[in-house]
Length: 152
Ligand SMILES: [Zn+2]
Ligand SMILES: [Zn+2]
Image (cartoon, rainbow, N blue to C red; front, side, top):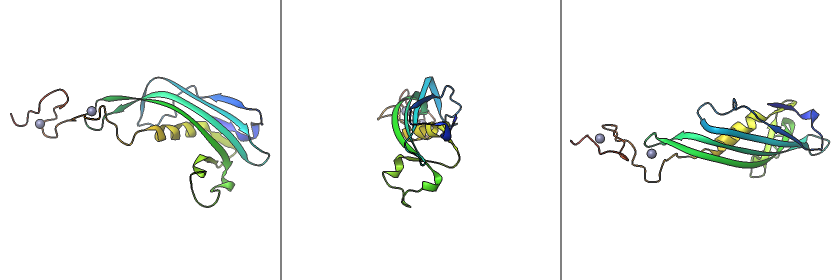
């Protein structure tokens, strides 16, 4: 969903992404997606406030046993949207500039924002349980459920 920045005023506008076409291709979801963004112009120059909320449940695969792992995401975030001329703010990306969202054209693509939030919400390592035993590399047995057949 693209929002023309010029159409925004100081009065907050709420946008909801109804579909999920923006979900990263490598992710799957279970149930509904709630993605809303409140947008308003911050000043006369080129700066807008974006307050977003993203709620969905991702279906991931355990890194060890490939079993399904449900990963609930309940994410609230705030960005200051700036045009690319103001980017990067001081030539370096620090903590503060991480809260900036640069746009190159006259429109802000909310799908891109929510896609990025999904990436940020993904765990570095997906495990169905801390002590998941995984699959045996030899016989492929799911060691959570059965015994390895290699030595029999
Ligand atoms: Zn597992
Ligand atoms: Zn085995």
